[in-house]
Image 1 (cartoon, one colour):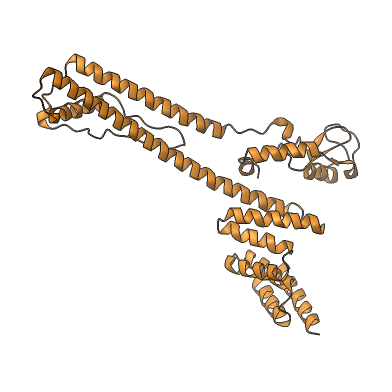
Image 2 (image 1 turned 180 degrees about the vertical axis):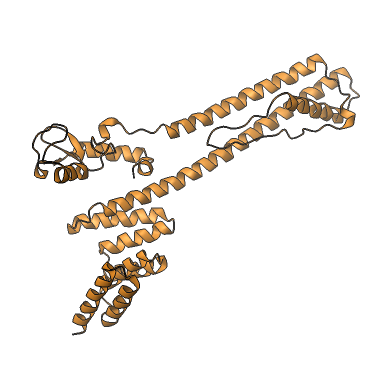
Amino acid sequence: MTAEKGEAIKEKGNKHFLQRKYNDAIHCYNQALKQNGEKAIYYVNRALCYIKLKQWDKVYQDARHCLDLDPNYIKAHAYLGQYYIEQQRYDEAITCFKQALELSKIQNKNFGDEIQRLLRYAQKRRFSLMEQKRIENEISLQTYLRSLIQSDKERRMQLNIEKYLEEKDSTQSSTNSLSILKYYLSKMTNHHNQQTTTNLSSFVSVSPKITTTNNSETNIVIDQQLEQALHEIEQSTDQSLNEMNNLFNEVDIRRKRREIPEYLTCKLCYDLMRDPVITPFGITYCRSCIEENLYKVSHLDPIANKPLVVEQLVNNLVLKEIVEKFIKENEWVNSECF
């Protein structure tokens, strides 16, 4: 009698859910759980209400309760995956959705494309997060390398100045070499704009360590021999900076040059064929695209323009394997194809 009462209350909760009265539905599921706290479906139904209300901690609790009662409950794995997405714990979300898909195959249950869609979304978010971290690391590395190159330039310039002063007048001090270096760097700053990084959509300016001169330095004169030596160091530094910038630009260009081979794209949606099927006429489409076309448009192969029914579609296993390999080697696909 208690079990029947619990089922009746659950059905009432389901009606509230369909009417989008989620709090009323939750109240019913609470009452049903009081009748029978061992029914996994009550927890999973309530978890879905909490998803609609975006009460994610409660989603987690109910999904876990459900899985404690039934580790093979497909929806509980999917709802737990949605919780992990909200927490930006994408690896755990992906694990949950993959588990849900595996259980769907074992239990021969069809949830349409919903779980696959959630899996792709989690993969997309994980890739985006990793990509952002990669870009930040590249910017930090580029800034650090630029700093090293600039420091090395100043070190080499000062060594050249000190050597020049020693040869010219052994009584000159290292203080004079620093003054000359400061003067030269200030002079060069006034002659051209500072280098900036242009890749990764950010501009990282680098200023010389010393750019000001005091009144005592205004009378400094650098002879042609020393200025030529310093100019050569400046040129070699500019070349190193340009080579470094080109290298980072190439990385950025490769990141943007992302294309899916035409033979892997569907002729109806022009997207990657994740579930390719082939017609008797040798043409491959996404299963969902060709089935929708047959149901909504006509019972014809849209390319061959010949009669076609769903039963004639055959999984293109060879192409599916190629697609899966392409996705594995090009993780950005899950970011772009969504």
